[in-house]
Length: 145
Image (cartoon, rainbow, N blue to C red; front, side):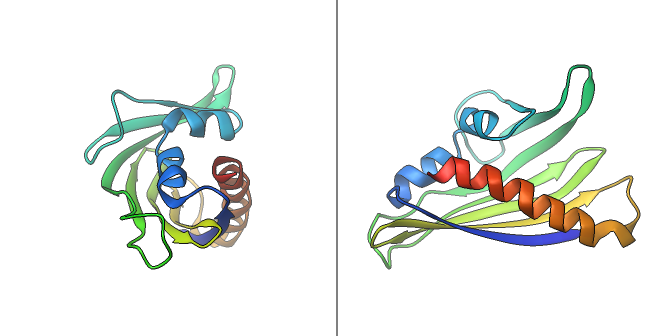
């Protein structure tokens, strides 16, 4: 189990940043070799699949939205937005969540991930965490700018 936290500043107001982070099409555009498949607007209980791969090689990362609460406003001190997701795939499990907090210049995002690659031995968790933090960090920065 690899745990990591990524922090990113965004020039977007908190609500706009939050809306962009729950725009699953934006994730497909920001994350190389990955396309999200979903139905309807983001909501608690929504199931979606991130298909990652190249050509016929790839895997499905099956996820369910457990919590989805937009920020209360765009002013510093307003209640942050929150998203919590559980991964239910055969190859990838764990949880992912993020908060979007308003700041004087936009918003701050804190992305927390508990990543389980089911077929890898646990002694590889530090490597999985380092790679995951870098890969998800690049995607997150694309999403929030």
